[in-house]
Length: 125
Image (tube, rainbow, N blue to C red; front, top):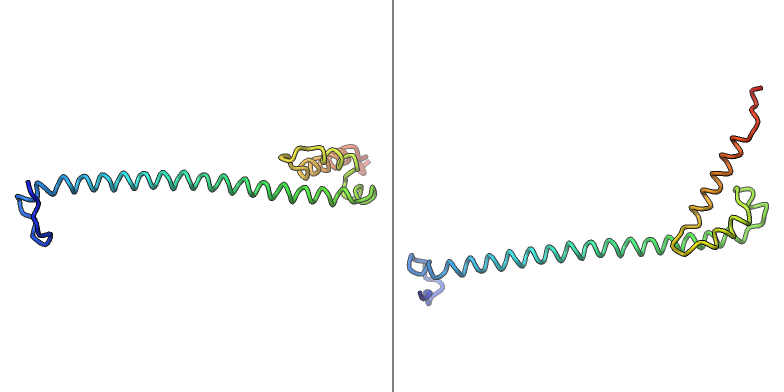
């Protein structure tokens, strides 16, 4: 069947049969394009989130290494005041770049404090 030559001509029963396959094909292509675009955006969104998380982790690691460098500049008395020893700083410097030295130091300090509290004599007796 032939399509009407004039696009302003109303769709009649005759040319509707010729037009409907085109409409369905166009709708199918549009749907496939949209679902493909949605998949792309979903994947690129996940990739962007992963990239953002890696960049944030890298910036946090740099910041923590700078904090460790400042701690390494302190003398024994200053380190003792915050519950650390020079050996703690030495061990923290030996960690890989992916490990957080400040977490390790915080665990060391917390362990020492809890040990001191448990070992302290009772004042009630």
